[in-house]
Length: 206
Image 1 (cartoon, rainbow, N blue to C red):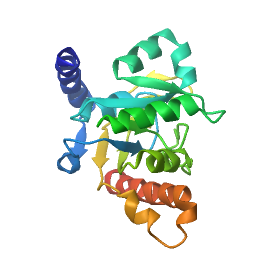
Image 2 (tube, rainbow, N blue to C red):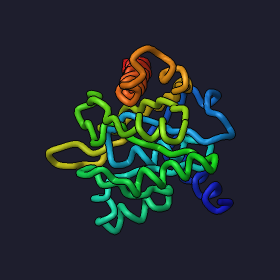
Image 3 (cartoon, one colour):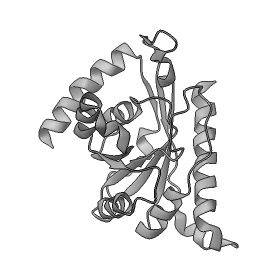
Image 4 (cartoon, one colour):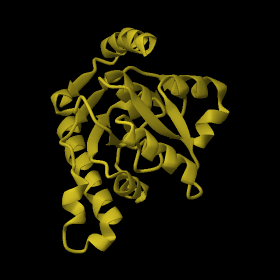
């Protein structure tokens, strides 16, 4: 982890410079205890950007297709990513997520399940609600803007837009479970998380 932190600090400083990165809400991040980090998803580089700016060790859930590309696989593995099959109920990925959280670490998940390169935020998948309930884990919403402009179609040229990341207030799911209609707790949790992400996104994309 010493090597990880050292290299992360070096690469992070470089990315901050070239993308003029603006980070908000770092003071809201708990320095101890396991929880889920949920962000909107605009680009393949989102796990790297968020991971570089996040002050703690972070494990990212990433689609299994990424691991078929040697270059991408090498990058995301360095940032502690593990595969999830989006086309099936991936019990192994869920069990690993719970194990990480129960060990007091942080799991990063993109609840939309896919990238939204147009900058719009898609609906969240209820998997995050299920994982948070099984792990009894709070959730921190995160919003990122600008990363969808790094590589643009149709020529797929590389650009250097300003990147903004905002960390929001922790969502305590215990309050959700105790609410009326808590039988639909996964769906309620997902809605609260996505509403929080959208609110954060509006603040940094305006």
